[in-house]
Length: 117
Image 1 (tube, rainbow, N blue to C red):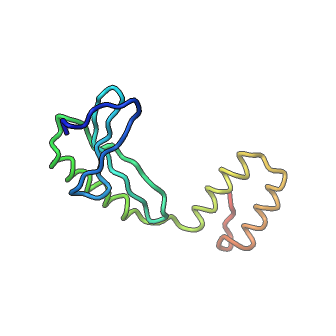
Image 2: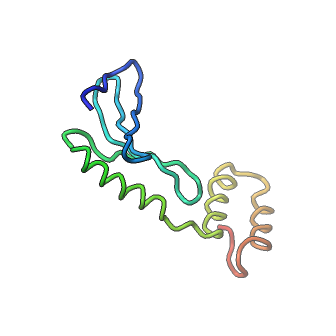
Image 3: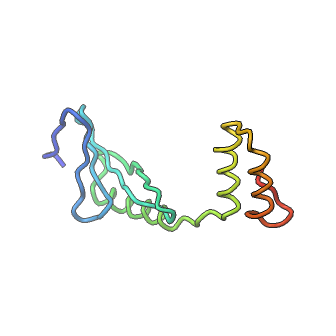
């Protein structure tokens, strides 16, 4: 890790022993251990594991745990995803068609007796 020198921009250096584990080097020369992985839905997650004086073996062990927890996260229910979408994209934008979208979701997408909001 001592060979990794600061550059004008932040960069990452891959750990050859653990896929998805990197050393991130800041322009200031500060270094940290990070992991990059995707959850079951395909979304990419970057997580900081630690920084020196943390040893590389400890960082790898912690990185494996973080990667496993992200990859094994249970997928959201369809109903939960639909509700979040309705809040983030319809209500937040104050769409004039919100009533029609909600009606459609109640009728076709969510279980009977439950609404989109």
